[in-house]
Length: 123
Image 1: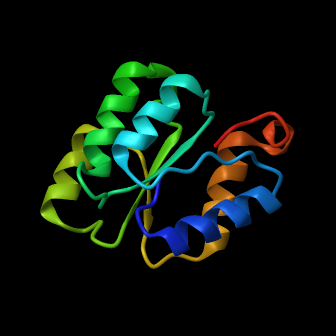
Image 2: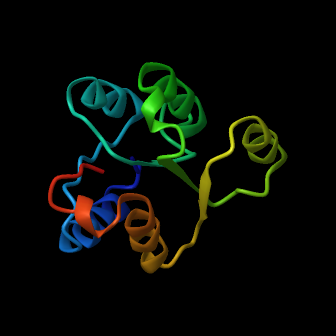
Protein backbone atom coordinates (compact mmCIF):
# COMPACT_ATOMS: atom_id res chain seq x y z
CA UNK A 1 0.00 0.00 0.00
CA UNK A 2 1.82 3.02 -1.22
CA UNK A 3 0.45 6.55 -1.01
CA UNK A 4 2.41 7.88 -3.98
CA UNK A 5 0.35 6.94 -7.04
CA UNK A 6 3.26 6.71 -9.49
CA UNK A 7 5.33 4.45 -7.26
CA UNK A 8 2.28 2.33 -6.47
CA UNK A 9 1.65 1.81 -10.22
CA UNK A 10 5.30 0.89 -10.82
CA UNK A 11 5.22 -1.64 -7.98
CA UNK A 12 1.96 -3.09 -9.31
CA UNK A 13 3.41 -3.50 -12.81
CA UNK A 14 6.70 -5.00 -11.64
CA UNK A 15 5.01 -7.56 -9.40
CA UNK A 16 2.32 -8.39 -11.97
CA UNK A 17 5.04 -9.03 -14.57
CA UNK A 18 6.52 -11.54 -12.14
CA UNK A 19 3.18 -13.35 -12.14
CA UNK A 20 1.75 -12.08 -8.86
CA UNK A 21 -1.85 -10.91 -8.47
CA UNK A 22 -1.60 -7.44 -6.94
CA UNK A 23 -4.19 -5.60 -4.85
CA UNK A 24 -3.32 -1.93 -4.40
CA UNK A 25 -4.69 0.83 -2.19
CA UNK A 26 -3.78 4.49 -1.75
CA UNK A 27 -4.76 4.74 1.91
CA UNK A 28 -4.67 2.66 5.07
CA UNK A 29 -8.44 2.73 5.32
CA UNK A 30 -8.90 1.47 1.77
CA UNK A 31 -6.32 -1.26 2.32
CA UNK A 32 -7.97 -2.39 5.56
CA UNK A 33 -11.39 -2.55 3.87
CA UNK A 34 -9.98 -4.31 0.81
CA UNK A 35 -8.28 -6.96 2.93
CA UNK A 36 -11.53 -7.62 4.79
CA UNK A 37 -12.92 -9.12 1.60
CA UNK A 38 -9.81 -10.21 -0.33
CA UNK A 39 -7.24 -12.78 0.82
CA UNK A 40 -3.61 -11.66 0.68
CA UNK A 41 -0.58 -13.91 0.95
CA UNK A 42 1.71 -10.93 1.56
CA UNK A 43 1.39 -7.20 2.23
CA UNK A 44 3.75 -4.37 1.37
CA UNK A 45 3.11 -1.18 3.36
CA UNK A 46 4.56 2.29 3.30
CA UNK A 47 5.22 3.72 6.77
CA UNK A 48 3.99 7.16 5.69
CA UNK A 49 0.34 6.99 4.63
CA UNK A 50 -2.10 9.93 4.48
CA UNK A 51 -4.30 9.47 7.55
CA UNK A 52 -2.95 6.44 9.42
CA UNK A 53 0.62 5.27 9.58
CA UNK A 54 1.61 2.03 7.92
CA UNK A 55 2.80 0.90 11.35
CA UNK A 56 -0.70 1.30 12.80
CA UNK A 57 -2.16 -0.47 9.77
CA UNK A 58 0.31 -3.33 10.28
CA UNK A 59 -0.99 -3.82 13.83
CA UNK A 60 -4.62 -3.67 12.70
CA UNK A 61 -3.98 -6.19 9.93
CA UNK A 62 -2.22 -8.76 12.09
CA UNK A 63 -4.92 -8.37 14.74
CA UNK A 64 -7.57 -9.20 12.11
CA UNK A 65 -5.42 -11.68 10.14
CA UNK A 66 -2.84 -13.34 12.44
CA UNK A 67 -1.63 -15.50 9.53
CA UNK A 68 -0.04 -12.35 8.03
CA UNK A 69 2.60 -12.20 10.78
CA UNK A 70 5.92 -12.59 8.96
CA UNK A 71 4.26 -11.87 5.62
CA UNK A 72 4.20 -8.07 5.80
CA UNK A 73 7.05 -5.79 4.75
CA UNK A 74 7.19 -2.08 5.45
CA UNK A 75 8.82 0.49 3.19
CA UNK A 76 10.38 3.50 4.81
CA UNK A 77 12.59 6.38 3.84
CA UNK A 78 13.16 6.93 7.55
CA UNK A 79 13.78 3.37 8.76
CA UNK A 80 16.51 4.63 11.11
CA UNK A 81 14.24 7.04 12.99
CA UNK A 82 13.88 6.42 16.70
CA UNK A 83 10.12 5.86 16.34
CA UNK A 84 10.49 3.25 13.60
CA UNK A 85 13.39 1.50 15.36
CA UNK A 86 11.44 1.31 18.64
CA UNK A 87 8.38 0.00 16.81
CA UNK A 88 10.46 -2.67 15.04
CA UNK A 89 11.83 -3.91 18.37
CA UNK A 90 8.27 -4.76 19.38
CA UNK A 91 7.05 -5.82 15.92
CA UNK A 92 9.84 -7.44 13.93
CA UNK A 93 9.14 -7.48 10.19
CA UNK A 94 10.92 -7.01 6.90
CA UNK A 95 11.97 -3.42 6.23
CA UNK A 96 12.64 -2.22 2.70
CA UNK A 97 14.50 1.07 2.95
CA UNK A 98 13.71 3.83 0.45
CA UNK A 99 14.98 4.54 -2.02
CA UNK A 100 15.06 0.88 -2.94
CA UNK A 101 15.91 -1.14 -5.98
CA UNK A 102 12.78 -2.73 -7.45
CA UNK A 103 14.69 -6.00 -7.50
CA UNK A 104 14.59 -5.93 -3.68
CA UNK A 105 10.78 -5.94 -3.78
CA UNK A 106 10.71 -8.79 -6.29
CA UNK A 107 13.24 -10.76 -4.25
CA UNK A 108 11.19 -10.25 -1.06
CA UNK A 109 8.06 -11.55 -2.83
CA UNK A 110 9.94 -14.46 -4.38
CA UNK A 111 11.49 -15.51 -1.06
CA UNK A 112 8.21 -15.18 0.81
CA UNK A 113 5.81 -16.60 -1.74
CA UNK A 114 8.05 -18.86 -3.77
CA UNK A 115 7.69 -19.61 -7.44
CA UNK A 116 4.77 -22.01 -6.92
CA UNK A 117 2.55 -19.30 -5.34
CA UNK A 118 2.78 -16.84 -8.21
CA UNK A 119 -0.27 -17.88 -10.16
CA UNK A 120 -2.62 -18.33 -7.20
CA UNK A 121 -1.14 -15.99 -4.62
CA UNK A 122 -2.27 -12.51 -3.81
CA UNK A 123 0.05 -9.74 -2.71
